[in-house]
Structure formats: C-alpha cells, structure tokens
Amino acid sequence: MPGTRITDQQVYLYMNHRRSKTQEVAAAKTGISVRSARRVENATALPSQNPRRYWRSRPDPFAAVWDSEVVPLLRGAPKLMAITLLRKLQDDHPDQFPDGALRTLQRHVRQWRALEGPPKEVFFPQQHVPGQRGLSDFTAMGELRITIAGAPFTHILYHFVLAFSQWEHVEVVAGGESFEALSKGLQNALWQAGGAPQEHRTDSLSAAFKNLTEAEDFTVRYAALLEHYGMAGTRNNRGLGHENGSVESPHRFLKVAIEQALLLRGHRDFADRVGYEDFVRDAVLRRNRRHAAAFRIEREQLQGLPARRSTDFVEEEARVTRCGTFTVRDILYSAPSRLIGHRLKVRLYSDRLDCYLSGTLVLTLARGTRAPGKTRGRMLDYRHFIDALKRKPQAFKGLLFRDALFPREAYRRTWEQLAQQLPQRQACQTIVALLEMAARDGVEGALAERLEALLVSGELPDLRRLREQFAPRTPELPQITVEIPAASTYDALLPSAQVDQCQEVVA
Image 1 (cartoon, helix red, strand yellow):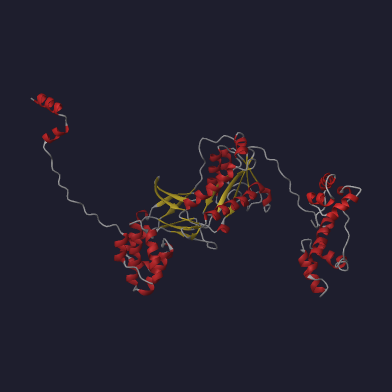
Image 2 (image 1 turned 90 degrees about the horizontal axis):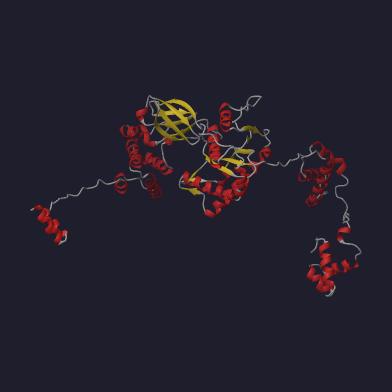
C-alpha cells in the first residue's frame, strides 16, 4: 500500500513464495506490488537494516521568519498554538503564508518544544496494594439530562473506588457535596464491601477539610468518621485532579456506561427517583462483575468493620412558625399545623430530614436544595396547608410561597388560567378544591393528566365532573337477611348409619 513500508516479515514471506512461484504470484500472496518485489530481489539488506532517510521535498516556507519572529513568540508564551502563530504571520505578511502551511508549522512547533520547550509534567504510575487505599469523590451528572416524571433532575453522584480491584460503589445525591452525603455514601460502600481499607483519599472536599485555614486540617466530623473505621485520611494537592486518578478515570467510564444504558433504554425519563437509583445500581453491578476476581483478593486484606455504623446525620433545631413552616440551612420546609409553636430536633441526612419532638419521630421530609444562583430554597408540601386553605381560600392568591405549593406543572398552569378568566374568589376556591382532591383521594398524577388535557383544549376544570371521575363514591351497603336453619337439616350431610348412632346417643 502507498505510504506503508515493507517489513522484514514480508521479505521472508515473499522469498519463500518466490522459490516455487512467479514474481507476480509471490508478490500478490505477500501483499506487495510487483515493483516492490523487484526491489526486494535486488536489495542486499533487510528493510530494518536500511534506516529511512528524510529529505525535504520543497523549500521551507517559514525559513525566513522562524528564528526572527516565531521562536521569540514561543519563548515568551510556550503554550501558543500553531494556528495562532499562523494567523499572526498572515496578518504581518499578507499573501505569504496560506492556510495549507499549517501542518508544516505544527511540525516545526512540535520539534521546537521537544528541543527547547519547557519541561512537561511527569506522571508516575502507582502500584496499588490490596486493601491499602479507597478513594471518594463526587461527579456532576447534568450532561446526561435525566428527568423524573418529566421534570429535570439536578443531581450528582458520590463515587467510591477501591484502588487495587477497581470495585466501586455509587450513591445518587440530590443536594451538594455535603458531609452527610459523604458519610452516607462512604459507610454504605464499606458495609457493602465488607471491610475498610487502610487509607481513605479525597480531593479538597469542603465536607472533609477546613480549606479556609492554612493547615487545612480535617473537619471534626470527618476525623471522627475516619477514626470510627480505623482509616487514615489523605488528600491530593489542590487543583491536581489527576492525583486522584484512580477515581477520576472511573468517573468518565461510569458516565459512559450509564449513557450507553440510557441509549439502549430509549429515553431518559424515570417515574420516580427510586427507579433511577435502581437503574444506576444495575449499571454499577455490571461493571463490578468484571472486577470480581481482583475484589476477592482485596476483600481478604480489608480491615474488619466496627460493631455499628457511625452517625451520618447532623442535628439542628428549628421552631415551626405560625405559618406552618420552619427553616433549616436556608431551606424553607412545611409541617402539619398541629406542630406550630413547637421546637423540633431535626436530624439532617443527605436525602431526608427526620424531625423529633421530645424524642418521638413526628415528621419525615425529603431534603430540599437551592436552585443554582439562589441563596434560599423551598421544600413545601401542599398537603400540610389544605385544611387551612379550605377555611381561607382567598389567601391563596397573595400567598408568599404560593408557587412552591403546586405539586406539578399542570396545577400551576391551571391556576394561571383560573386567575385570568374567573373572579378571584371563584378562582381560589377552584384551585384549592383541586389540590384537596389530589391530596385526599390520591389522584395527583391522574388529575394532573386530566388538567393538562383541559389546558390543551382551552377548557376550565369542572369540579363536579372531576369529582365524579376521580373522587371515590360513597359505597351503598346491601341489606342482608340472615335465616337460621333448623338443626335437623344438618343430618342430611351425614351418612345414615352415623345419624342412627347419634339418635341413639341422644335417647
């Protein structure tokens, strides 16, 4: 083939064929041309014994400006790209350097960097010992465009990897890189693996390190977590992610695996978060099967686990205001009205809040997040306000957190149409009745689909028809009359001999 050098193996093969075949046939069987075959027969040495000679086929177009203009620019800024240098030369010397000369300039720049350029960073491959190191990191998943029930699902993944076997564990995190998410993910990984490594390595996670201090010590909670599992904590240098390469590289391959599984699935929407978490877990299990042999080796070298898990929550206190809300870490939550005025002990996990009153668990809520660029967030449950809104429906129009009460987009759009086309009193009564129907009768999703259809057709919801369609009807109890049969009728169920015997006993 043109541009392909003949190898020593091809020469040997050709000469073997040539002993019994013509030059043309031997060349065809070897995969070379007849012209090359003639050169092989006339050659006195193998191709490897004749080093290739390089020669210039045309004059160097940059000879006049290389030392005087290009090299000084490279010495001042070694990261300049060849295309940038070519554009500079085209501006300074019009009509002298065509775009086709770019490849020649790239070879010159590459050669200069090899001979005179700055030194490059050297990467040192590490030999990992079984049971020695585990690594944790978070990775963003926005590029995969996952949706839950049609709504974008903003989340990240907590990723744990054992360095020797590449066994991994993943947790879906809806919030940020908090200590709660790190603690929960790490402990779940260790208990699933059945042991703990000697060392736990991360990058500059604010959940683990006091990055604002000069010493950059561990946070108190992270130090206690490491001590509980007998692990030493280490970190890579700030800004040098490749030092955490044993987990940074799996990030990329994990995302590719999830992306490919999504393509096979045909869509990226999931009915709920549990379904998405199961999907991610299946992808990780398939990857771990390839590392099963190495993991069995590493499993024998892991430290034993303690008798119990460490805490993976943070306790805070919050008072429920007269509005039926309380605030934890700049997120506004709702609570049942019976808790108004009480101070709750809140255990803040990575995915939920457990609220206690005098040691009794009274409320569990999903943990809220702040929208990008926002300093505060809202995580309100419209069910907590239904009874109060039924008594004061017109309060809905001017409610400060009204938009956070709509459980789905269809309800919000329905309210906009009601507010535009109906008087305020009727509009408020209608939307409150719709929310009550969704909450009391468990038809939130089905009712949302019906409201969406009405919006498309330009109709307003008819409460009477919707109640007939979705609200459960009061069952009618049938009238039942019980007739007690005579005892003698049961004799027909017994054989005649037994009936006679029973009669004798009675007599």
